[in-house]
Length: 90
Image (tube, rainbow, N blue to C red; front, side, top):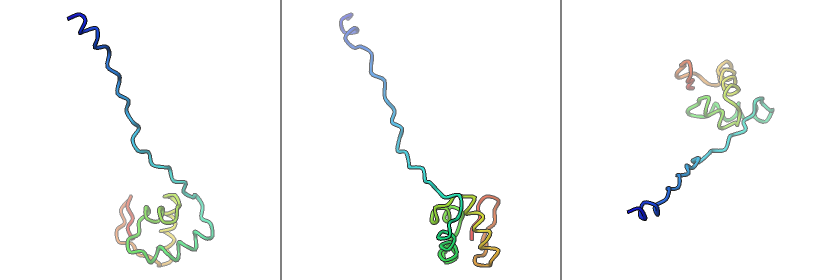
């Protein structure tokens, strides 16, 4: 009995993987002229426009995308479908 208990030893500790890490996107914080022109050409023709879709399409951060949507709405290029405090859908 003593020999069997001594032979078992301590089990190795399980190493947890970090999981799949997605790369952090390096979004712009100011509009360049090319991005600004792309905003007025591409975004109004989209069927479903949100802050996230603009941010993803133009590679700009969320606050810049919000300001861009406000500018497009002011010019009459897009019209709001739903204006919630967080989610703006155009």
